Image 1 (cartoon, rainbow, N blue to C red):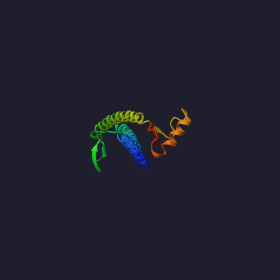
Image 2: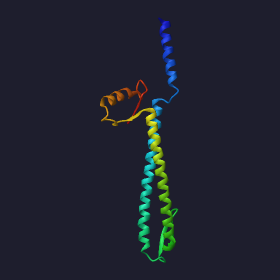
Image 3: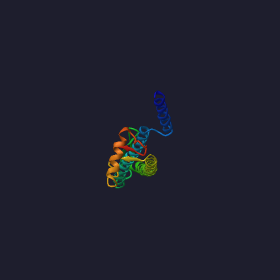
Image 4: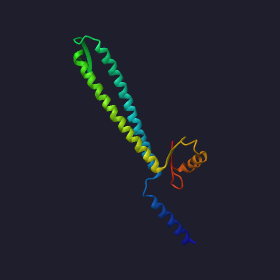
Length: 161
């Protein structure tokens, strides 16, 4: 009897040793959350840069109506410098172009991150809370009850809030 229980213990430890080849449910969720946060940060940065473009556009439109020899002040690296409108206007337009290119680059990176997130979700069968409610309520309830420990017993999916 004691020999049988020790054999059973060895079988369960060897089968759990086989599952160690892939990341644990906690690692999958942590990686997914990190990737989502990176995408949110990119979106936040893009929105911030969009506001900068709007401000640049407003200033450029205002300065176009002003005499080019008129004095104006510009903040450069935390220092207010005195320039003329004809010196500042081209610099502002150049900055606006650079910011536009940066936004395009960030949007491209966000799309790539979105594809990467989708592939990751499909690879590890990650389901977000509230997702697929119309598809099958019973499956979502079973998945969430099985996932309370971080993963279902079959390892089929991970539920992320």
